[in-house]
Length: 538
Image (cartoon, rainbow, N blue to C red; front, side):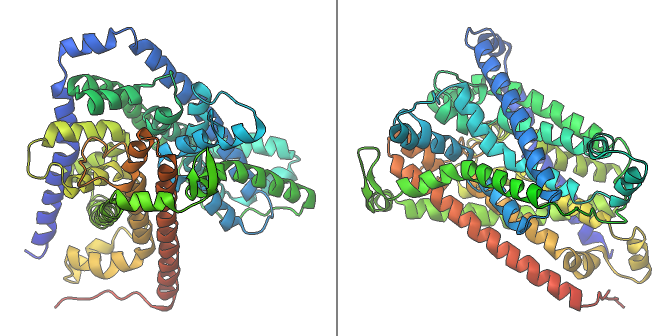
Protein backbone atom coordinates (compact mmCIF):
# COMPACT_ATOMS: atom_id res chain seq x y z
CA UNK A 1 0.00 0.00 0.00
CA UNK A 2 2.92 2.33 0.75
CA UNK A 3 4.00 2.47 -2.92
CA UNK A 4 0.51 2.48 -4.42
CA UNK A 5 0.81 6.11 -5.55
CA UNK A 6 4.15 5.32 -7.22
CA UNK A 7 2.73 2.49 -9.33
CA UNK A 8 -0.40 4.49 -10.17
CA UNK A 9 1.76 7.34 -11.47
CA UNK A 10 3.99 4.90 -13.30
CA UNK A 11 1.16 3.37 -15.35
CA UNK A 12 -0.39 6.79 -15.89
CA UNK A 13 2.93 7.95 -17.31
CA UNK A 14 3.20 4.87 -19.53
CA UNK A 15 -0.30 5.55 -20.87
CA UNK A 16 0.60 9.16 -21.59
CA UNK A 17 3.76 8.17 -23.48
CA UNK A 18 1.89 5.61 -25.57
CA UNK A 19 -0.82 8.16 -26.44
CA UNK A 20 1.59 10.97 -27.34
CA UNK A 21 4.40 8.98 -28.98
CA UNK A 22 3.24 5.60 -30.26
CA UNK A 23 -0.36 6.48 -31.19
CA UNK A 24 0.54 9.50 -33.42
CA UNK A 25 3.18 7.49 -35.28
CA UNK A 26 0.66 4.70 -35.78
CA UNK A 27 -1.85 7.23 -37.11
CA UNK A 28 0.75 8.55 -39.55
CA UNK A 29 1.46 5.07 -40.89
CA UNK A 30 -2.24 4.20 -41.00
CA UNK A 31 -3.03 7.25 -43.12
CA UNK A 32 -0.84 6.16 -46.02
CA UNK A 33 -2.53 4.46 -48.96
CA UNK A 34 -0.89 2.60 -51.81
CA UNK A 35 -2.04 5.19 -54.35
CA UNK A 36 -0.40 7.96 -52.31
CA UNK A 37 2.88 6.08 -52.21
CA UNK A 38 2.87 5.54 -55.98
CA UNK A 39 1.91 9.15 -56.65
CA UNK A 40 4.61 10.69 -54.46
CA UNK A 41 7.47 8.25 -55.00
CA UNK A 42 6.72 7.92 -58.69
CA UNK A 43 6.64 11.65 -59.37
CA UNK A 44 9.37 13.21 -61.49
CA UNK A 45 10.45 15.54 -58.67
CA UNK A 46 10.88 12.93 -55.92
CA UNK A 47 14.33 11.61 -56.92
CA UNK A 48 15.82 15.12 -57.44
CA UNK A 49 14.48 16.18 -54.03
CA UNK A 50 15.89 13.04 -52.40
CA UNK A 51 19.23 13.67 -54.12
CA UNK A 52 19.24 17.30 -52.92
CA UNK A 53 18.51 16.20 -49.37
CA UNK A 54 21.18 13.49 -49.31
CA UNK A 55 23.95 15.51 -50.96
CA UNK A 56 23.48 18.60 -48.78
CA UNK A 57 23.09 16.50 -45.63
CA UNK A 58 26.25 14.46 -46.26
CA UNK A 59 28.31 17.56 -47.05
CA UNK A 60 27.00 19.51 -44.05
CA UNK A 61 27.51 16.53 -41.74
CA UNK A 62 31.13 16.04 -42.79
CA UNK A 63 31.97 19.73 -42.42
CA UNK A 64 30.15 20.10 -39.08
CA UNK A 65 31.67 17.01 -37.48
CA UNK A 66 35.23 17.73 -38.65
CA UNK A 67 35.02 21.39 -37.62
CA UNK A 68 33.49 20.51 -34.25
CA UNK A 69 36.14 17.88 -33.54
CA UNK A 70 39.06 20.16 -34.48
CA UNK A 71 37.79 23.03 -32.33
CA UNK A 72 36.90 20.82 -29.35
CA UNK A 73 40.32 19.16 -29.57
CA UNK A 74 42.09 22.53 -29.78
CA UNK A 75 40.12 23.82 -26.80
CA UNK A 76 40.97 20.82 -24.60
CA UNK A 77 44.59 20.47 -25.74
CA UNK A 78 45.66 24.07 -25.23
CA UNK A 79 46.25 26.35 -22.25
CA UNK A 80 44.14 29.26 -23.46
CA UNK A 81 42.20 31.27 -20.90
CA UNK A 82 38.41 31.68 -20.62
CA UNK A 83 37.62 28.23 -22.01
CA UNK A 84 34.07 28.30 -20.59
CA UNK A 85 33.45 31.58 -22.45
CA UNK A 86 34.55 30.01 -25.74
CA UNK A 87 32.23 27.05 -25.11
CA UNK A 88 29.33 29.43 -24.57
CA UNK A 89 30.14 31.44 -27.70
CA UNK A 90 30.51 28.33 -29.87
CA UNK A 91 27.03 27.20 -28.79
CA UNK A 92 25.28 30.55 -29.43
CA UNK A 93 23.86 29.30 -32.78
CA UNK A 94 21.83 26.75 -30.80
CA UNK A 95 19.78 29.58 -29.28
CA UNK A 96 18.03 30.70 -32.49
CA UNK A 97 15.82 28.74 -34.93
CA UNK A 98 17.42 27.06 -37.92
CA UNK A 99 15.38 29.28 -40.23
CA UNK A 100 17.14 32.30 -38.67
CA UNK A 101 20.50 30.95 -39.79
CA UNK A 102 19.19 30.73 -43.33
CA UNK A 103 17.73 34.21 -43.09
CA UNK A 104 21.02 35.54 -41.68
CA UNK A 105 22.92 34.16 -44.66
CA UNK A 106 20.40 35.74 -47.04
CA UNK A 107 20.82 39.10 -45.27
CA UNK A 108 24.59 38.82 -45.62
CA UNK A 109 25.25 37.01 -48.89
CA UNK A 110 21.95 37.10 -50.79
CA UNK A 111 21.50 39.03 -54.02
CA UNK A 112 20.86 42.19 -51.96
CA UNK A 113 22.91 41.13 -48.94
CA UNK A 114 25.04 43.44 -46.85
CA UNK A 115 28.34 41.78 -47.83
CA UNK A 116 27.20 41.40 -51.45
CA UNK A 117 26.44 45.13 -51.78
CA UNK A 118 29.49 46.20 -49.77
CA UNK A 119 32.06 44.13 -51.67
CA UNK A 120 30.12 43.84 -54.96
CA UNK A 121 30.73 40.09 -54.82
CA UNK A 122 27.88 37.61 -55.20
CA UNK A 123 28.85 34.16 -53.91
CA UNK A 124 25.78 32.48 -55.45
CA UNK A 125 24.21 31.63 -52.11
CA UNK A 126 21.00 29.97 -53.23
CA UNK A 127 21.15 26.22 -53.77
CA UNK A 128 23.50 23.62 -52.35
CA UNK A 129 25.99 26.23 -51.12
CA UNK A 130 23.44 28.09 -49.02
CA UNK A 131 21.85 24.94 -47.60
CA UNK A 132 25.22 23.51 -46.56
CA UNK A 133 26.43 26.79 -45.03
CA UNK A 134 23.23 27.28 -43.03
CA UNK A 135 23.09 23.65 -41.95
CA UNK A 136 26.67 23.80 -40.64
CA UNK A 137 25.80 26.88 -38.57
CA UNK A 138 22.72 25.12 -37.24
CA UNK A 139 24.21 21.70 -36.44
CA UNK A 140 27.86 22.39 -35.57
CA UNK A 141 27.27 23.29 -31.86
CA UNK A 142 25.64 19.91 -31.14
CA UNK A 143 28.68 17.96 -32.34
CA UNK A 144 31.03 20.40 -30.61
CA UNK A 145 29.38 19.85 -27.22
CA UNK A 146 29.54 16.07 -27.63
CA UNK A 147 33.27 16.15 -28.45
CA UNK A 148 34.05 18.71 -25.76
CA UNK A 149 32.37 16.58 -23.11
CA UNK A 150 34.19 13.39 -24.16
CA UNK A 151 37.63 14.99 -24.35
CA UNK A 152 37.33 16.27 -20.78
CA UNK A 153 37.30 12.70 -19.44
CA UNK A 154 40.46 11.29 -21.01
CA UNK A 155 42.91 9.62 -18.64
CA UNK A 156 46.39 11.13 -18.87
CA UNK A 157 48.14 8.04 -17.43
CA UNK A 158 47.66 6.25 -20.76
CA UNK A 159 49.42 9.08 -22.60
CA UNK A 160 52.22 9.07 -20.03
CA UNK A 161 52.77 5.36 -20.62
CA UNK A 162 52.76 5.92 -24.38
CA UNK A 163 55.36 8.68 -24.01
CA UNK A 164 57.60 6.37 -21.97
CA UNK A 165 57.33 3.75 -24.74
CA UNK A 166 58.48 6.35 -27.27
CA UNK A 167 55.23 6.99 -29.18
CA UNK A 168 55.14 10.36 -30.92
CA UNK A 169 52.27 12.82 -30.40
CA UNK A 170 50.83 11.89 -33.78
CA UNK A 171 50.96 8.15 -32.97
CA UNK A 172 49.33 8.81 -29.60
CA UNK A 173 46.53 10.66 -31.38
CA UNK A 174 45.98 7.78 -33.81
CA UNK A 175 46.28 4.91 -31.32
CA UNK A 176 44.76 6.40 -28.14
CA UNK A 177 42.62 9.49 -28.83
CA UNK A 178 40.77 8.35 -31.95
CA UNK A 179 39.82 4.87 -30.65
CA UNK A 180 38.63 6.45 -27.39
CA UNK A 181 36.51 8.93 -29.36
CA UNK A 182 35.00 6.31 -31.68
CA UNK A 183 31.61 6.17 -29.99
CA UNK A 184 31.32 9.93 -29.76
CA UNK A 185 32.29 10.40 -33.40
CA UNK A 186 29.64 7.91 -34.56
CA UNK A 187 27.01 9.47 -32.30
CA UNK A 188 27.87 12.97 -33.53
CA UNK A 189 27.66 11.91 -37.18
CA UNK A 190 24.27 10.28 -36.65
CA UNK A 191 22.92 13.21 -34.62
CA UNK A 192 24.04 15.85 -37.14
CA UNK A 193 22.87 13.79 -40.14
CA UNK A 194 19.40 13.41 -38.65
CA UNK A 195 19.17 17.12 -37.75
CA UNK A 196 20.16 18.32 -41.20
CA UNK A 197 18.22 15.73 -43.20
CA UNK A 198 14.92 16.55 -41.48
CA UNK A 199 15.31 20.35 -41.23
CA UNK A 200 13.32 22.60 -43.53
CA UNK A 201 14.18 26.02 -42.03
CA UNK A 202 17.54 26.50 -43.75
CA UNK A 203 16.53 25.02 -47.16
CA UNK A 204 13.35 27.10 -47.11
CA UNK A 205 15.44 30.29 -46.94
CA UNK A 206 18.53 29.40 -49.00
CA UNK A 207 17.52 26.43 -51.15
CA UNK A 208 16.39 28.38 -54.20
CA UNK A 209 15.39 25.85 -56.85
CA UNK A 210 17.08 22.98 -54.97
CA UNK A 211 14.05 21.77 -53.04
CA UNK A 212 14.56 19.20 -50.29
CA UNK A 213 12.11 16.64 -48.93
CA UNK A 214 11.25 18.54 -45.70
CA UNK A 215 10.51 21.73 -47.67
CA UNK A 216 8.28 19.77 -50.05
CA UNK A 217 6.45 18.21 -47.12
CA UNK A 218 5.98 21.61 -45.48
CA UNK A 219 4.54 23.14 -48.64
CA UNK A 220 2.29 20.16 -49.34
CA UNK A 221 0.75 20.21 -45.87
CA UNK A 222 0.70 23.95 -45.10
CA UNK A 223 0.15 25.27 -48.61
CA UNK A 224 -2.03 22.57 -50.20
CA UNK A 225 -3.43 20.72 -47.15
CA UNK A 226 -2.29 17.46 -48.76
CA UNK A 227 -1.97 15.38 -45.58
CA UNK A 228 -1.71 12.01 -47.33
CA UNK A 229 1.14 13.14 -49.57
CA UNK A 230 2.83 14.79 -46.62
CA UNK A 231 2.52 11.53 -44.64
CA UNK A 232 4.40 9.62 -47.36
CA UNK A 233 7.27 12.11 -47.25
CA UNK A 234 7.10 11.96 -43.45
CA UNK A 235 7.74 8.22 -43.49
CA UNK A 236 10.65 8.71 -45.92
CA UNK A 237 12.14 11.26 -43.51
CA UNK A 238 11.50 8.91 -40.60
CA UNK A 239 13.43 5.98 -42.09
CA UNK A 240 16.99 7.38 -41.92
CA UNK A 241 16.25 8.90 -38.52
CA UNK A 242 15.12 5.54 -37.14
CA UNK A 243 18.11 3.81 -38.77
CA UNK A 244 20.45 6.34 -37.15
CA UNK A 245 18.68 5.84 -33.83
CA UNK A 246 19.10 2.06 -33.97
CA UNK A 247 22.75 2.36 -35.00
CA UNK A 248 23.38 4.78 -32.13
CA UNK A 249 21.75 2.38 -29.67
CA UNK A 250 23.89 -0.47 -30.95
CA UNK A 251 27.00 1.70 -30.80
CA UNK A 252 26.29 2.88 -27.24
CA UNK A 253 25.85 -0.66 -26.07
CA UNK A 254 29.02 -2.02 -27.62
CA UNK A 255 32.58 -1.81 -26.50
CA UNK A 256 33.92 -1.21 -23.08
CA UNK A 257 32.41 1.17 -20.68
CA UNK A 258 33.97 4.51 -19.95
CA UNK A 259 37.17 4.18 -18.00
CA UNK A 260 37.78 5.81 -14.64
CA UNK A 261 39.92 8.94 -14.94
CA UNK A 262 42.79 8.54 -12.50
CA UNK A 263 44.68 11.60 -13.72
CA UNK A 264 43.34 14.57 -15.64
CA UNK A 265 44.96 15.36 -18.99
CA UNK A 266 47.92 17.70 -18.52
CA UNK A 267 48.59 20.11 -21.37
CA UNK A 268 52.19 21.15 -21.97
CA UNK A 269 53.09 24.83 -22.16
CA UNK A 270 53.36 26.08 -25.74
CA UNK A 271 52.82 29.81 -26.30
CA UNK A 272 52.93 29.61 -30.11
CA UNK A 273 50.25 26.90 -30.14
CA UNK A 274 48.00 28.90 -27.80
CA UNK A 275 48.30 32.06 -29.93
CA UNK A 276 47.39 30.03 -33.02
CA UNK A 277 44.34 28.63 -31.19
CA UNK A 278 43.23 32.16 -30.22
CA UNK A 279 43.51 33.31 -33.85
CA UNK A 280 41.61 30.30 -35.22
CA UNK A 281 38.88 30.63 -32.59
CA UNK A 282 38.53 34.33 -33.36
CA UNK A 283 38.05 33.64 -37.07
CA UNK A 284 35.52 30.85 -36.46
CA UNK A 285 33.56 32.91 -33.93
CA UNK A 286 33.45 35.86 -36.31
CA UNK A 287 31.98 33.65 -39.05
CA UNK A 288 29.56 31.92 -36.66
CA UNK A 289 28.29 35.21 -35.27
CA UNK A 290 27.92 36.98 -38.63
CA UNK A 291 24.18 36.16 -38.84
CA UNK A 292 23.72 37.57 -35.33
CA UNK A 293 25.52 40.76 -36.38
CA UNK A 294 23.16 40.96 -39.33
CA UNK A 295 20.11 40.62 -37.05
CA UNK A 296 21.37 43.41 -34.82
CA UNK A 297 22.11 45.75 -37.74
CA UNK A 298 18.90 45.15 -39.67
CA UNK A 299 16.59 45.18 -36.65
CA UNK A 300 16.94 48.93 -36.39
CA UNK A 301 17.18 50.20 -39.99
CA UNK A 302 14.48 52.05 -41.88
CA UNK A 303 14.21 49.96 -45.04
CA UNK A 304 16.64 47.23 -46.09
CA UNK A 305 18.53 47.61 -48.45
CA UNK A 306 17.27 51.01 -49.68
CA UNK A 307 17.63 53.10 -46.51
CA UNK A 308 20.03 51.74 -43.85
CA UNK A 309 19.64 54.67 -41.46
CA UNK A 310 18.76 54.00 -37.82
CA UNK A 311 15.04 53.65 -37.15
CA UNK A 312 12.62 52.06 -34.69
CA UNK A 313 10.04 51.62 -37.42
CA UNK A 314 10.34 47.81 -37.37
CA UNK A 315 9.63 47.81 -33.62
CA UNK A 316 6.53 49.95 -34.20
CA UNK A 317 5.28 47.66 -36.98
CA UNK A 318 5.72 44.55 -34.88
CA UNK A 319 3.83 46.15 -32.00
CA UNK A 320 1.01 46.96 -34.41
CA UNK A 321 1.06 43.31 -35.57
CA UNK A 322 0.39 42.07 -32.00
CA UNK A 323 3.91 40.81 -31.34
CA UNK A 324 3.06 41.04 -27.64
CA UNK A 325 0.53 38.23 -28.06
CA UNK A 326 3.07 36.06 -29.90
CA UNK A 327 5.64 36.80 -27.20
CA UNK A 328 3.19 35.69 -24.49
CA UNK A 329 2.41 32.53 -26.52
CA UNK A 330 6.11 31.67 -26.79
CA UNK A 331 6.76 32.25 -23.12
CA UNK A 332 3.68 30.23 -22.11
CA UNK A 333 4.61 27.32 -24.38
CA UNK A 334 8.28 27.37 -23.32
CA UNK A 335 7.55 27.62 -19.59
CA UNK A 336 4.83 24.93 -19.62
CA UNK A 337 6.96 22.65 -21.82
CA UNK A 338 9.96 23.09 -19.52
CA UNK A 339 7.94 22.51 -16.34
CA UNK A 340 5.85 19.55 -17.51
CA UNK A 341 8.62 18.06 -19.66
CA UNK A 342 11.14 18.13 -16.81
CA UNK A 343 8.70 16.47 -14.41
CA UNK A 344 7.69 13.74 -16.90
CA UNK A 345 11.20 12.96 -18.17
CA UNK A 346 12.67 12.94 -14.65
CA UNK A 347 9.98 10.61 -13.32
CA UNK A 348 10.44 8.34 -16.35
CA UNK A 349 14.18 8.19 -15.65
CA UNK A 350 13.51 7.50 -11.96
CA UNK A 351 11.32 4.53 -12.89
CA UNK A 352 13.71 3.01 -15.43
CA UNK A 353 16.94 3.71 -13.51
CA UNK A 354 15.78 2.77 -10.01
CA UNK A 355 13.05 0.13 -10.39
CA UNK A 356 14.75 -2.85 -12.02
CA UNK A 357 14.39 -4.26 -15.51
CA UNK A 358 10.69 -5.14 -15.50
CA UNK A 359 8.88 -5.36 -18.87
CA UNK A 360 6.88 -2.20 -18.13
CA UNK A 361 10.07 -0.33 -17.23
CA UNK A 362 11.77 -1.49 -20.43
CA UNK A 363 8.75 -0.28 -22.41
CA UNK A 364 8.94 3.15 -20.77
CA UNK A 365 12.67 3.32 -21.56
CA UNK A 366 12.09 2.36 -25.20
CA UNK A 367 9.27 4.86 -25.74
CA UNK A 368 11.28 7.57 -23.95
CA UNK A 369 14.17 6.96 -26.34
CA UNK A 370 11.94 6.54 -29.41
CA UNK A 371 11.15 10.26 -29.62
CA UNK A 372 14.84 10.84 -30.36
CA UNK A 373 14.31 9.12 -33.72
CA UNK A 374 11.22 11.13 -34.74
CA UNK A 375 11.95 14.34 -36.71
CA UNK A 376 9.96 17.37 -35.60
CA UNK A 377 8.29 17.86 -38.96
CA UNK A 378 7.09 14.22 -38.92
CA UNK A 379 5.95 14.49 -35.31
CA UNK A 380 3.95 17.64 -36.04
CA UNK A 381 2.12 16.02 -38.94
CA UNK A 382 1.42 12.87 -36.90
CA UNK A 383 -0.18 15.04 -34.19
CA UNK A 384 -2.38 16.69 -36.83
CA UNK A 385 -3.58 13.31 -38.06
CA UNK A 386 -4.12 11.99 -34.51
CA UNK A 387 -5.73 14.88 -32.63
CA UNK A 388 -7.50 16.89 -35.33
CA UNK A 389 -11.07 17.59 -34.25
CA UNK A 390 -10.44 17.15 -30.52
CA UNK A 391 -10.99 20.09 -28.11
CA UNK A 392 -7.25 20.29 -27.38
CA UNK A 393 -6.43 20.86 -31.06
CA UNK A 394 -5.31 24.40 -32.01
CA UNK A 395 -4.64 25.30 -28.38
CA UNK A 396 -1.48 26.11 -26.45
CA UNK A 397 -1.67 22.72 -24.76
CA UNK A 398 -1.19 20.67 -27.94
CA UNK A 399 1.91 22.76 -28.69
CA UNK A 400 3.21 21.91 -25.22
CA UNK A 401 2.44 18.21 -25.78
CA UNK A 402 4.25 18.02 -29.12
CA UNK A 403 7.27 19.92 -27.75
CA UNK A 404 7.54 17.59 -24.75
CA UNK A 405 7.58 14.58 -27.05
CA UNK A 406 9.98 16.23 -29.50
CA UNK A 407 12.62 17.07 -26.88
CA UNK A 408 11.92 14.30 -24.36
CA UNK A 409 14.87 11.96 -24.96
CA UNK A 410 17.86 14.17 -24.17
CA UNK A 411 16.62 15.40 -20.75
CA UNK A 412 15.49 11.85 -20.00
CA UNK A 413 19.02 10.57 -20.65
CA UNK A 414 20.50 13.32 -18.47
CA UNK A 415 18.32 12.24 -15.55
CA UNK A 416 18.78 8.52 -16.28
CA UNK A 417 22.58 8.81 -16.22
CA UNK A 418 22.52 10.86 -13.00
CA UNK A 419 20.13 8.53 -11.18
CA UNK A 420 22.04 5.43 -12.29
CA UNK A 421 25.11 6.60 -10.34
CA UNK A 422 23.42 6.13 -6.94
CA UNK A 423 24.08 2.96 -4.94
CA UNK A 424 22.01 0.11 -6.35
CA UNK A 425 21.01 -1.03 -2.85
CA UNK A 426 19.48 2.29 -1.82
CA UNK A 427 15.90 1.19 -2.55
CA UNK A 428 16.33 -2.02 -0.54
CA UNK A 429 17.65 -0.05 2.43
CA UNK A 430 14.79 2.45 2.12
CA UNK A 431 12.21 -0.36 2.03
CA UNK A 432 13.76 -1.90 5.16
CA UNK A 433 13.52 1.45 6.93
CA UNK A 434 9.90 1.89 5.83
CA UNK A 435 10.53 4.71 3.36
CA UNK A 436 8.19 4.85 0.35
CA UNK A 437 9.49 5.30 -3.19
CA UNK A 438 7.87 8.71 -3.56
CA UNK A 439 9.37 9.85 -0.27
CA UNK A 440 12.90 8.85 -1.26
CA UNK A 441 12.37 10.51 -4.66
CA UNK A 442 11.52 13.89 -3.12
CA UNK A 443 13.85 13.72 -0.13
CA UNK A 444 16.97 12.12 -1.64
CA UNK A 445 17.13 11.95 -5.43
CA UNK A 446 15.69 15.34 -6.35
CA UNK A 447 17.87 17.34 -3.91
CA UNK A 448 20.98 15.41 -4.97
CA UNK A 449 20.34 15.88 -8.70
CA UNK A 450 19.07 19.47 -8.66
CA UNK A 451 21.81 20.64 -11.06
CA UNK A 452 20.70 18.02 -13.58
CA UNK A 453 17.08 19.12 -13.18
CA UNK A 454 18.03 22.75 -13.88
CA UNK A 455 19.89 21.61 -17.01
CA UNK A 456 16.83 19.60 -18.13
CA UNK A 457 14.55 22.58 -17.58
CA UNK A 458 16.90 24.83 -19.56
CA UNK A 459 17.05 22.35 -22.44
CA UNK A 460 13.27 22.15 -22.73
CA UNK A 461 12.85 25.94 -22.49
CA UNK A 462 15.45 26.90 -25.10
CA UNK A 463 14.31 24.31 -27.63
CA UNK A 464 10.63 25.17 -27.15
CA UNK A 465 11.51 28.82 -27.91
CA UNK A 466 13.33 28.05 -31.17
CA UNK A 467 11.39 25.10 -32.59
CA UNK A 468 9.48 25.55 -35.82
CA UNK A 469 9.15 22.12 -37.40
CA UNK A 470 7.15 20.38 -34.66
CA UNK A 471 4.60 23.16 -34.14
CA UNK A 472 4.22 24.59 -37.65
CA UNK A 473 1.28 22.30 -38.51
CA UNK A 474 -0.54 22.82 -35.21
CA UNK A 475 -0.80 26.59 -34.72
CA UNK A 476 -3.35 29.19 -35.65
CA UNK A 477 -3.19 32.99 -35.39
CA UNK A 478 -4.13 32.98 -31.69
CA UNK A 479 -1.50 30.41 -30.65
CA UNK A 480 1.40 31.32 -32.96
CA UNK A 481 4.78 31.60 -31.15
CA UNK A 482 7.55 34.03 -32.00
CA UNK A 483 9.60 31.49 -33.97
CA UNK A 484 6.82 31.02 -36.54
CA UNK A 485 6.64 34.76 -37.13
CA UNK A 486 9.97 34.49 -38.95
CA UNK A 487 8.72 32.60 -42.05
CA UNK A 488 5.46 34.60 -41.96
CA UNK A 489 7.24 37.97 -41.95
CA UNK A 490 9.73 36.76 -44.55
CA UNK A 491 6.88 35.86 -46.89
CA UNK A 492 5.64 39.46 -46.46
CA UNK A 493 9.16 40.77 -47.31
CA UNK A 494 9.39 42.37 -43.87
CA UNK A 495 13.10 41.61 -43.52
CA UNK A 496 13.69 44.01 -40.64
CA UNK A 497 10.93 42.29 -38.67
CA UNK A 498 12.40 38.82 -39.16
CA UNK A 499 15.78 40.07 -37.94
CA UNK A 500 14.23 41.68 -34.85
CA UNK A 501 12.22 38.56 -33.96
CA UNK A 502 15.33 36.39 -34.31
CA UNK A 503 17.23 38.80 -32.08
CA UNK A 504 14.44 38.71 -29.47
CA UNK A 505 14.52 34.91 -29.33
CA UNK A 506 18.30 34.95 -28.96
CA UNK A 507 18.18 37.49 -26.11
CA UNK A 508 15.46 35.55 -24.27
CA UNK A 509 17.42 32.30 -24.51
CA UNK A 510 20.66 33.96 -23.39
CA UNK A 511 18.85 35.37 -20.35
CA UNK A 512 17.45 31.92 -19.56
CA UNK A 513 20.92 30.38 -19.83
CA UNK A 514 22.37 33.02 -17.49
CA UNK A 515 19.61 32.39 -14.94
CA UNK A 516 20.09 28.61 -15.21
CA UNK A 517 23.85 29.01 -14.73
CA UNK A 518 23.34 31.16 -11.62
CA UNK A 519 20.86 28.66 -10.15
CA UNK A 520 23.20 25.74 -10.81
CA UNK A 521 26.08 27.49 -9.08
CA UNK A 522 23.86 28.27 -6.10
CA UNK A 523 22.62 24.67 -5.95
CA UNK A 524 26.15 23.27 -6.15
CA UNK A 525 27.38 25.59 -3.39
CA UNK A 526 24.42 24.70 -1.18
CA UNK A 527 24.87 20.98 -1.81
CA UNK A 528 28.51 21.22 -0.83
CA UNK A 529 27.62 22.72 2.55
CA UNK A 530 24.61 20.56 3.41
CA UNK A 531 24.87 16.89 4.44
CA UNK A 532 22.50 14.34 2.92
CA UNK A 533 19.62 13.36 5.21
CA UNK A 534 17.43 10.34 4.57
CA UNK A 535 14.06 10.68 6.32
CA UNK A 536 12.61 7.66 8.09
CA UNK A 537 8.86 7.16 8.27
CA UNK A 538 7.65 5.45 11.38
